[in-house]
Image (tube, rainbow over all chains, first blue to last red; front, side, top):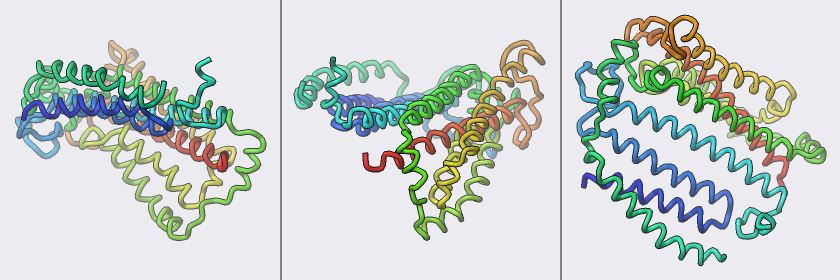
Length: 114
Length: 246
């Protein structure tokens, strides 16, 4: 099935967001967000993939070898870095929330509704 | 709104988003036949024009270097924000407890961590240095190097992180790495015609020193990433240790 990777990417995104919506723990919420973000890697790499092509490294292969799209790989690198920084920042905020409110259950953070 | 209700409400919305995303990907080239003119051009020309055998590297550090500055500064800002958020948490009481906290001291873990120090440094430096030739580069190697912070904590050197000078040194390294990359960009303005123009010769593809400014950019980014992640790790560990019972 030639569209399967794209369907899986869409499914990962929706499942990740479902996890965020129904989360009962802020750390779990952050992990669910990273699942949703992982869909973008799959989509990007899926777009650039070519059957029978090798990695875009010409160290030991002749210059005429077919390679997968290097541009989406560079974009994925950017994506990974941004995801990890977002996760780190959210985990730091989670620690702050725990200290301030004594809970990490999003439903119990009623003070934020006021 | 209860969690259950939220989940139920999400189901039709999630299904709609899923259907929309799948419909949107229908217009993409079939999986396994993906190719773009930009990608083809990069794969065909960069080995000769930039002297890099890894053609992802010239996209990240040359053609799209301006994007990479933004990415690097995001990392810089996030590390600074983590430090800012977590340090305000450390009360005087917490500081005292932190100082009295026994260091991690499990003999097998300690022995293993000590054995790992040198290989981690060598592997990280290797991956950073060969970024223009083989898979790897500043980001990947920097993350490997930053794991040194975790290895050192495992080796019972947690006290090292608490010493005054250590975090200052790490912060300084982070600033130097970020600044060096920006300077490379300005170098393009000074020695060539545009920011981030590759103002050094391409060299021989496959040589350690090839690719013009790309290896230099890899080193700058490697230092920045290693320091930023080490800082994030240390701040998170310290904060966790400090609030041990909370």
